[in-house]
Length: 312
Ligand code: HPA
Ligand code: ZN
Image (cartoon, rainbow, N blue to C red; front, side, top):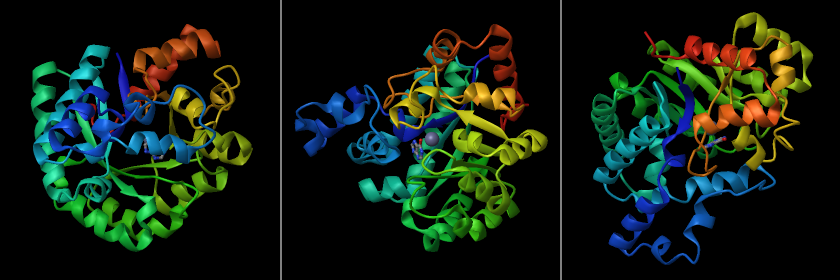
């Protein structure tokens, strides 16, 4: 069974669809000299921010609500082609508004429609996670949650993403308290663009049940013990970590040390288009390049199933 718990809708937008919609609208992306290079990482980029620039360059071309319904359908269709059984799709309605001018509520409705239809067609079970964008600042946190809660039934969980170097997670505590009060589950990007203190803050101040990436937790043995004891699952995306230069290579990725410390680890894709990867490719890299055993990969797959927010 294949479970991907960490996939950004913005990071799945196909290059071909981006090109087609940009041409329709006369958007500057249509005349980009090398659209592939703008949207896809081919190797280490030296940091999280240049990687996010590739993830975040595509949404501007999706200028109508119907484009987001199509994006959602294509995302689920691609997941079905990979052989996924279950997919959690996360996106930031406020980021999409910033890029397109669309009302975030209209984007949520379109994405939820598209995902529902494609999920029914393909049999891939899906759940949506609403992202609060760090970059907009904590003063926008409550407003972003209010938007998600205006479509409460569409979401299973809330996440914090964007430039981790920017704003401390603790500043979003009121927003996450509101989300938890409404019954949303919590995952937080941390320990990717910043160190263990960021993971501690996500767990202590935001109530994170899972951590996006979290790989820099290896720098703090007390944190590893805490994650293992509490069963807090790290959503590890190997290729994304190479592209953001959080890990120097597959072979030197900290995943082995995380597993050895007893921390629950799930493999995920993060941004399949921006990283030119799939979930099966991530498992294959874990096996052949990291050198994990079949037993370790089975344990990882079981961890992903156990940590899913909406698996029965
Ligand atoms: N980190 C933070 N924000 C993101 C990422 C990531 O890896 N991918 C897409 N948005
Ligand atoms: Zn991510």
